[in-house]
View (cartoon, rainbow, N blue to C red):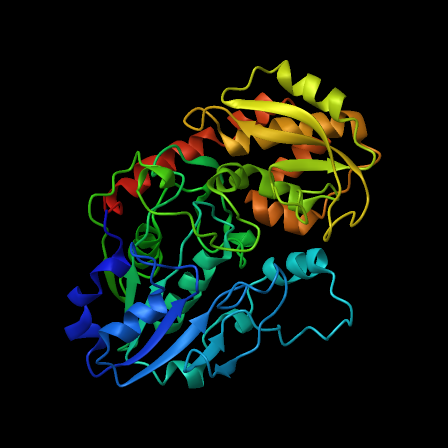
Length: 403
């Protein structure tokens, strides 16, 4: 299988040769031979100037979620690095860093600090985008791409997307669609949380359905990729796309368990199994597991565990928790699972669970999910409430699919 980055030669003449190029990528975006996208563009050469544009976590991924990144010149890389995850103008330095609070406050808004600044954008003839998405709407690399596309609308700047596989395959979207009034850096398109599109198809969705073809978009398609393929079937190694996405297994549970970020329950951040471990010091994990097992959910097995986060929520405290083991990824529905999980947790721990309302709603895509969990509505009724919009989405995306 060949990804977009493996076919740079096909765009060199029109989009790189003698052009001023801005490259949106990080060190974890690699071709099938393991070469970084930056080095691949350098190797092909021919450009007049090359500037590196970096997303959340910085180029080398050494910044945690919520940590803002400044622009600088990198002597080792030999390029100017312009950050697309800068500190918002409205925020003052708070001294010690609370990454959970910073993430909730920074990512649940749409802010100019995440856009390419006008003076920087004026330096480009072409912007090339090459980042690995994980198949989840709230993954901020999607918004980084959409904001860059918004910035080049109705300009003469070409926007080139080097397509990459959706690690979760291109099938079985899950969850409600994002409402317009909840758009933010973790929700830049009206799509479900598990969207089942490639990054190129997401760019196509924006350009055709929202921008009305006002971006000079070129998508370098993959070769030999099929919609039923999972990442571990591609013959290329997993290179963690962000600090808390260490394995494909993490990515599989992420479109559901990321909702836990919007509560005071630990999502396992600060352990070696983020999003696969869920818990808190006061949780009665055995009761929660027993309640969920009665629902006979497909494709998942739960184990009672203890864990101690070394950063993030409950740093250094022993948490009673749940280990989520996906036994059949083709049957497992991550968003439906987390509705059952949160409903069960709330049933036993309504006095101890706290929702960060705006952030939770921004992740979920609407405000009804949280309200209905708190009202103790049946998880099956909550899930049924968004099936109509999900079915409409499945029909809508047929015309923008590339594979």
